[in-house]
Amino acid sequence: MGLVGSNPTLSAKYFFTTYNMKKLVLIIIIILLLIVVGIAYLLTKQEETIKLTQPIEKTVTWEEAVNILNTGQVAYVMQAHNLDVILYLKNNTTLKTKEPHIDDIIFAVEKCGEPCKDLPIATE
View 1 (cartoon, helix red, strand yellow):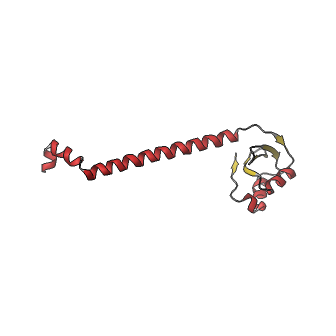
View 2 (view 1 turned 30 degrees about the horizontal axis):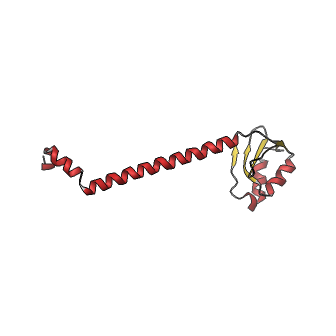
View 3 (view 1 turned 120 degrees about the horizontal axis):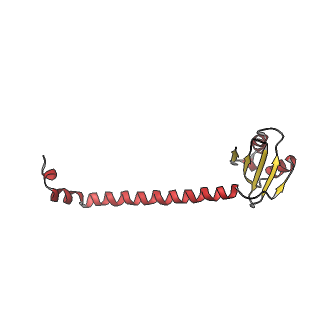
């Protein structure tokens, strides 16, 4: 057995050298940063969940919904199996419509082009 392993005092001295202390401090800082980022992420997700449960303010026709979509006012869209589509507008208004066929909202977003670029679509 080596000198360091046989003498607990030397092992402790070795561990607490400046080099090892710097590594330990760096690891602690990284862990704290990960915790902060994780908390920020969870708070963001909680905010999105709250937005998805906002009450529907108005029901519009499919044509009106597509027109609003094409103006770039929509922040994100939710599509349900029963053909209900909810538009969450950037001004925090929520609109409900019924798409004629399943996935019509997806095709409308694709056809929309630049105003709908990277528009999130949630499906049920």
